[in-house]
Length: 400
Ligand code: NDP
Image (cartoon, rainbow, N blue to C red; front, side, top):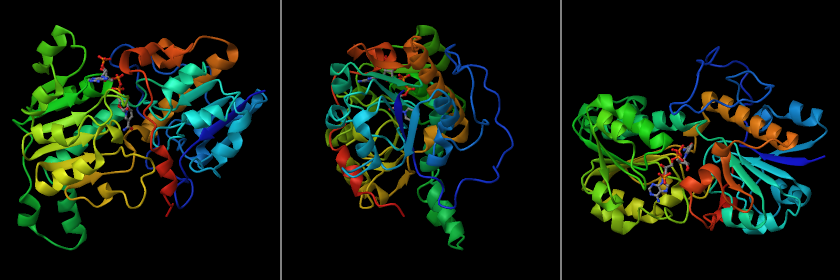
């Protein structure tokens, strides 16, 4: 029988919700590119429940224990005395979400001789050393498309929030003020602005589609071009390099995976090539930008605003400079873990586990690493190597 470790974020400080804000979720029939939603044989949760925190257990306990497997669920994931480190020695499967990632470094993989499968309940497997997983013949899988639209919605919200100066204006209300001039001294319309996405995959393209009705000029940079019909439909401008794109954009949104090719892409040099006063929204991964260069760019006015929900490491230590830098609209890593998204990726995780235990192939579109190499969607969207360096810093976070 297998031992499965499931690393999840902590429950709400006041405990699991007794009542939810809404009674149901809209029914989604399929994804935009024709991919089907997760197809597990069954689920043991009610769509709309909080599944991503420890007590939610991704709805997996009944299924796994009915097969006689051992399920360890914990939020304790960083530092040598963490539950994750203590339990790894005989684990066969490790599951975690990018929001609260189990950093599966080469050292950890070496400590887990029985490990065969690492599942990302969500999208983005950069928290696993993909090189080390390949070398050990461990399969890495994620639930492709499960929360791409959740993130795209968040990106649009953050672009509007920054450009229209929403958060500081909200804060004036809470403070009891009516300081209209203070609010609008940094407030603009997005209409007519040029917006560009780094990568036009599932999220990037969905962002472009959602911004089209705002009458913005749409740009993208990607290694592969979109079909001509899509470029025409959305009146898209493709750029051969990221430098070429950022110099003409008022707003840039980052939607590529983190891998050695994209790590530190937005460094001081690239930021200096952006238009002065541009906005940068990053919901992809914290390490794609240079942490300190972002702070400097906001302080000097090179960037008018920065928002996103991805940090490095996660959870971000209390003294992470992005918590206090000017003109930011950061949230913890939440865009892909709305209750709507959780329903899909919990079902997708269940589907992956059913395939694994029944000896059926995991869908190609869910595979990142398989049979010793990048595979499936991983072979298309990632490059070889490892992007987990520095993740031990997550142990400095203290829960409040
Ligand atoms: P997709 O795989 O659909 O899209 C990724 C795109 O990135 C592909 O079009 C790929 O191009 C492109 N790409 C990869 N490397 C480069 C590069 N070096 N330069 C330019 N483009 C590149 O993934 P999604 O859109 O669903 O997700 C993208 C990322 O967003 C995830 O990997 C994850 O890091 C992040 N994410 C964040 C979430 C959150 O909660 N904040 C939730 C979900 C995802 P091509 O294939 O053409 O080579």
